[in-house]
Length: 188
Length: 188
Image: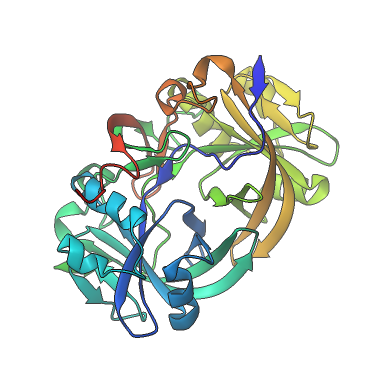
């Protein structure tokens, strides 16, 4: 028997997306985005949802570009810091000892120390409610060589991304391998 | 030093979202959606991206509603099956021995055996490219009582959702607790 818990914004799990942008003074900034993910395969696009009150909202409106950086588990404290403090008041790259690198394909900075970055140009802006969704076309992905799999794509076991659980407001690591997709469910 | 891997649709990790809908004959169907997640807190909304070629695309266009069902790790084979075979050709609920339940708030069925379901009414349809994004307002969430935490919301440790890794086409379980959000990153 299921219990109604009301209309709430809960899906478990969420990825941890650290969004990089330049503000109107070309200063690099990063924020943590809880709501986002891939939204189209062709062209490859990622969506992030921001409140207008965030500093990054104005920056993306100004620059029309952003990066999505995926941190490894070793950066969980840095990711949480990025989600607590605002770029209005401080240079978070500097506070955390992280290095901003200017993307060579879009007008946005990425985090050198994080293993994977998606470089996105704004394709659509969707007003939903408290959050505005920015749909960015992924112009390139850059990744540290040591986390690539044999197929040339990021190996999730080497990347060790972590998970944000909005319902409990906490973080979890990646667990055990469960099986191959499009394989374990096949009819015999 | 980062390597360019080109423009690709990769964010790690992705949730596993099993989308329920009625077709034009009011037959219940489920599909697996790789691209989706929460996209707004107020009103609470979830986005799913579908190709027009999918059977569910036509169903949601017809019914204007869908459910997002979150399976536990024990249902990884069922979830993979749902992602392989089309509702055009078979009744997947019947094939898998799962039970469709008609939502009491939207015109869509959910999976009784899966522990959490979001009941969504289409709020916006965003044409992106190969994928169309359906933004659904979450009218209610229903959950099995035995997976609720003390705060009345789904406990991710009890739910045991799993993860889809699109770059490697495989599934992973939830791992270790890493820390409290808005806490472990605070300045001392």
